Image (cartoon, rainbow, N blue to C red):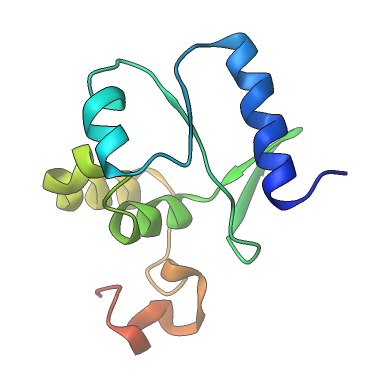
Length: 118
């Protein structure tokens, strides 16, 4: 099994064969110049090993809580969503069984660092 950067490159190369709109760990500049103008794009980046996951049948994805944390913690990647944070959070909490205490993937929902609100 591939690990770390090797896995990222294998996944990136495989996805590139399926689509030309694949970006490997893009920075803010790449996001603004190329990605934001697209209707669809695939971004390949490493997953933190402690990240909460959600399993749907044979498919494992990031949990809604992780996606919310990423939107706030990685503004360079989610630059287009920064003006819609309140709406995104409200929609997520109304549609999924997200918990504010599970937010940030740490006990207390990250309140120790002041990152997640109540």
